[in-house]
Amino acid sequence: MTEDGGGESEPGDDDVLLGRPIDETPLDTAELPMTPQRDRTIPATAWRQAPAALLEIGRDLQPAHEVVSYKRRIGRWTLWRAGPASRGEARYGAVAIDDPTHLVTFRLWADGRGEGAGPSGEVHTRFRSWKQDLQAADGS
Image (cartoon, rainbow, N blue to C red; front, side, top):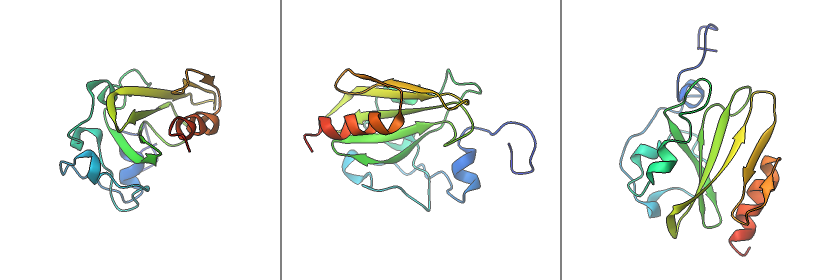
């Protein structure tokens, strides 16, 4: 829903509506914060080391989401999301800090189902277990 209660959300609206404007300031990996940002949205397009595949993770969602926003670090991974946090199609992507070509994703459907392979290669149907796979891949 849009701010006035009608129609579909535009890409990035969930963060913007929560008072987190998009901050396009270019950042290197070392500058990405460890924890979630409450005052701004960092789009993947602002990350200088962003792999092209990360920029595409929301394009096949219904509706398509062009904005892929940074969420936090989990061990040696940067966590990103395209789409809404709930009640809609979304995809999370995790990129290895030491190898930006290594991307794993977790897809969420509007009905609450989810699926994605973690770095171990195991396919998960729960987002929590997928994130635990990220943490385990760090050796923690």
